[in-house]
Image 1 (tube, rainbow, N blue to C red):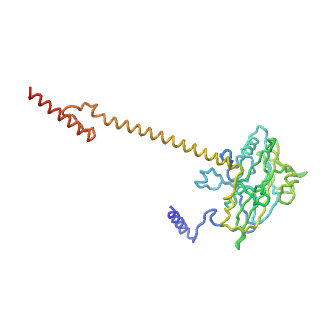
Image 2 (tube, rainbow, N blue to C red; image 1 turned 30 degrees about the horizontal axis):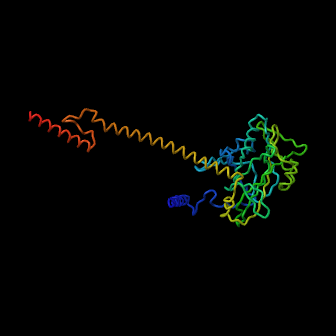
Image 3 (cartoon, rainbow, N blue to C red; image 1 turned 120 degrees about the horizontal axis):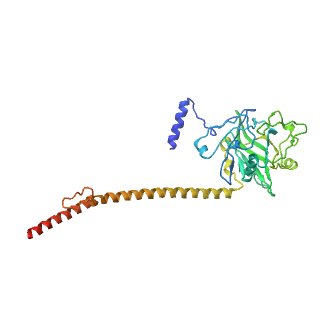
Length: 365
C-alpha cells in the first residue's frame, strides 16, 4: 500500500511538471511581513455530547461572505466543516482589542439566547485553524512548571452560582520561526477572556435586521474597556465577566500577538500531542461505551442475518433430500436421480433385493 501511495505521488508530481509536490499542512509556507494569514473556523464540538454543530448556525460574528473549504472523506466522516472567519491577522503585526462585532442575545424565549446558553452548558469549544494548525487554549500553569494546553477554545463557562458567562475576548498568540524567506507558523495558542465591554460615550452603534453591527468604522478607541495593550487577567477582572442575559449586547474583540520561536516547522505538531481536555475522563468513558454499543449492535445484526440465511439454506436442503421419496419412487423401477450418490446406491440395492425375493417366492409357489 505504501508503495502504491508513493507511485501515485510520483505520478502526480511528474504530471505537474515539477520536481516536488505539495499537500496542505505538509509543505511549509513562508509568510512575508504584512501578508494576510487566514484564521478558519471548524465545527463546534463538545466532550459531553459528541455532537458537532456548524459554526455559523449560532450567534457568532460572521464574515461578509462565508466560504466553505473543500473537505476530504476523513474530514467529512469526522463532522468537520471548515469555513473562513472575519478575523484580521497579518504576519508579524501585533494588534490589540480589535473589534470583531457586537451581537444581541435576543429574548429569553428566543432561539439565539437558548442556543448560546446550551452551548456553554454543554461545554462546547471553538475549533480554529491557522496554516492547518488547530488552536490550543492556554490553561493555567502551575508555579515552576510548564503551561498546559487544551484542545479548542471554550465558548464560555458556568459560574459557581449557575450563571452563564461568555468568552467574548481572545488573545491569539502566533508562534513563528523566522527563515530567510519569511516567517513559518509553528504554533497557535488562544487565551480566552470574559470581559464586560462597554462602548465609549457618544458612540453610535447601528444594528441590522440580523442583530449584528452594520457600520464597520468602529475600532478599539470606541470601546472604553480597551487599554491599547494586550488583555490581561487584571484588566478582565477589573471590567468584570460578560454574563449571558436576555436582551443584552455582547461585544467580541481579539488581540493578535506574534512571538518568535526556536521550534522548527517539522516539530510544530509536538505540542498538540500533549494537549489535554478538562473532561478527559468523560471523553474516554463515553467513547468506550459508544464503541462497545456500536460493536454489539453491528454484531447482533450480523448474527441475525447469518442465522436467517443458514436456516433458509437448511430448509431448502431438506426439501431437496426429501423430494424424491415423497414422489413415490420406492418401487422396483423407481427413479433415484434426485437422491445423493450414497442414498441412491442404497435404494437401488434394496430394490434389487426386493425383486430377487419376489422372484424366489413365485418360483417356490
